[in-house]
Structure formats: C-alpha cells, structure tokens
Amino acid sequence: MPEGDTVWNTARVLERALAGTRLTGSDFRVPALATTDLTDWTVRESASQGKHLLLRLDAPAGTGESRWTLHSHLRMDGTWRAYTTGERWSARPAHLIRVVLRAPVATAVGYHLHEVTLVPTAEEGRLTGHLGPDLLGVGWDATEATRRLTAHPDIPIGVALLDQRNLAGIGNLYKCEVLFLRGVHPRTPVRDVPDLTGLVTLAQALLAANRGRWTQSSTGSLRHGQTSYVYGRRAQPCRRCGTAIRKEDLGERVTYWCPTCQPGAP
Ligand SMILES: [Zn+2]
Image 1 (tube, rainbow, N blue to C red):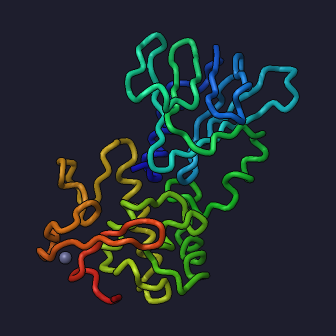
Image 2: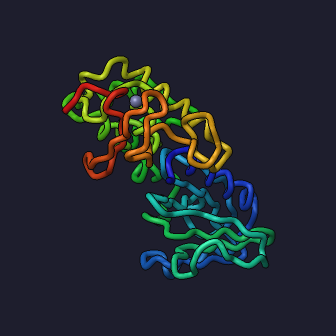
C-alpha cells in the first residue's frame, strides 16, 4: 500500500538511480506528455511530499524555463522501479508503463502512475500547496496538523486522517493501525478524540519507523502475517484481547478495528 513511507522510499530509489545524471532518453505513455522528450535534461533531485513524488530536473540551456518538476502520484497501485541500463524489465506488465527515463547507468520505469505532470519547479505549489504538514518532511509540524484536523470537528477521525489537506502521508493502513494503538473508534468525531496531537505524533513515528524498508509494520514484527494489529485482519482475533476484528466501509475506504479495544461509537 503506497503510503508516505513507501513514497519516501521510492523517492530515494529515484534519487540513487538518477540524481546528477543527464538523461539519454524518455518515453511518456500518458496523453498530455506524449510528445515530451527529456533527452539531455539533467536530474537535479528526487523528493516526496506526502504521497506526491517530485523529480526535479534542469532543462538544457536555451529551453527557456530552466528548472522543472516531473510530478507523479502512486495512489493505490503505482510504482517506480530502477533498473541497471540494459537489464530486462520484468517487475510488472509493459502495458502498465507510464514513464521511462533512460540514463547511462540506470533506467527508471514508472508503472501505473497517476497525475503525471511536468511543471516549472516554481509552480510546484499548484500540485502540492493544498497539502497539510508532511509526516516525513523536514518541516513536520504536529501542532499545525492538529489545528487543521480540529477545524472540522464533526468529521469522523477515520476519514479526517486520510484527508491529505490535514496532514500528508497517512494512508489506510496507518490510519487503521494508529487508531487501534490509541484505542479510538474510527467513527469518533474529531472533537471527541482525546489528545489529537499525541495521535498524529504516533502516526508520524509509525511512518518514520518504516522508512528505508518496504515491509510496513506497526507491530514491530516483520514476519509475514504479523505486521499489523487490525489492518487486513477481518474476523481474526485481536492481538490484545482476542475479539474478532471488524471491517466496514467508512467514507470512501474500508476500515478495520477491534470493537473491544476501540469502543465508543455505534
Ligand atoms: Zn482488542
């Protein structure tokens, strides 16, 4: 599940593969960029903000605007892979390829990417300016995240935590897990959640703990089937109390919770 930590890791993959290199070719399989050619563009850096990936590039001299950002979003199913140039791409089916960036040593392939856009770096804010504090950003600000959450007190906390305008980087897995760890029912209105700042601080710690690895764990265990308390565990016994974990729709997503450890809402 691409959440903030996965996107952060992906940004590092692209940074290692491409930063500082001049591209020898590109291939965009999204209509809006079908004629775009990044040959001779130099990759400046790769960054993430919430769940948005930002690959910053320098255009060749004489192109006009010199600093550009290739934006992409992974949503539920997108991924970027880096291959040694000449290596066979085998990770995912070819029809899912949206972007290919070729460099002398590495080739980066973006599969099933969303919102692929090329904008002047100075205009990045059009794409990310709405985001709340980035849980894995250098400027992470728990107080500001709390302020944004409490501005809409009637929203269920299980919906509010996924709204990237409040805080950026939490996806469904960490939402379910952090609410379990805090003993909060996902339907609890924001105004009734005790110590919101403590909750968002714990969410930040969960994401930060999973930076640098691809297995997402909230339990501390990396063993298959042991990595979550409630997420993906419908009808299985709660690891704390043995009650069967519940699953139901909440907003546009499903949510998992333990009715004993997270009481309070119908
Ligand atoms: Zn329980």
